[in-house]
Image 1 (cartoon, rainbow, N blue to C red):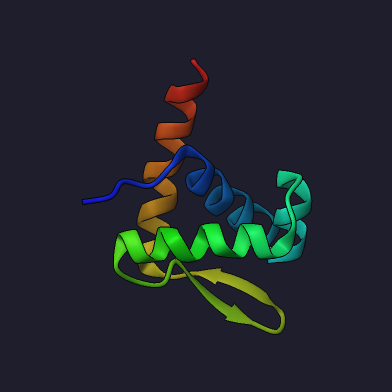
Image 2 (spheres, rainbow, N blue to C red):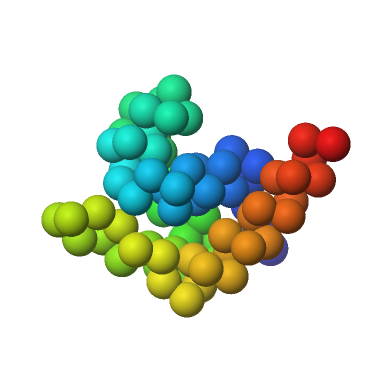
Length: 80
């Protein structure tokens, strides 16, 4: 079983904060395709979509909400 990387969790957090792949990628200092690939890998690990992709931006799914909650805790602990 694979576990998400801290980078993937950071991408999810930035995506939730910024509401779009472009702005989240900019905040992460990576290209949009890099961020998108990281989120897709996270979705494979979790077994479902973490965001609904729409023209107006992204919205977290139920899986995404749970993952974001756990990601926030893990990222905060990693910073300490």
